[in-house]
Length: 89
Image (cartoon, rainbow, N blue to C red; front, side, top):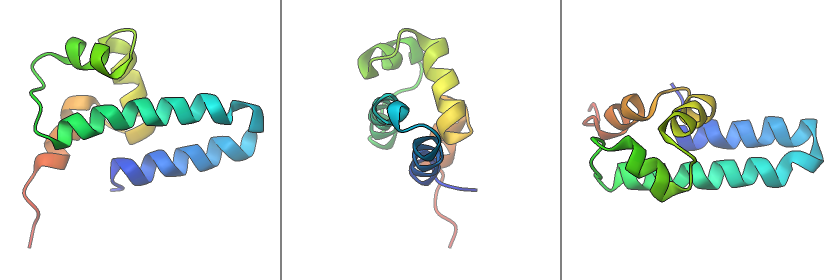
């Protein structure tokens, strides 16, 4: 499975090729989502997804969830579990 940063980069590349006029919109989406991933990686609590969504600039929790599924392929809580899981080795 791809990490969310790689998937977001691949999404940016795929959509950027399709329509150059949409690149700034997609870049804003990816940067906003990176704010969420940064908070997840910092160990931020996920019991208030609506608050996390608001802090990152999303309209609401549902907007964050849709964006997370689109860019990372996972809901925010599932993404957090994956990123916080101990590395196998």
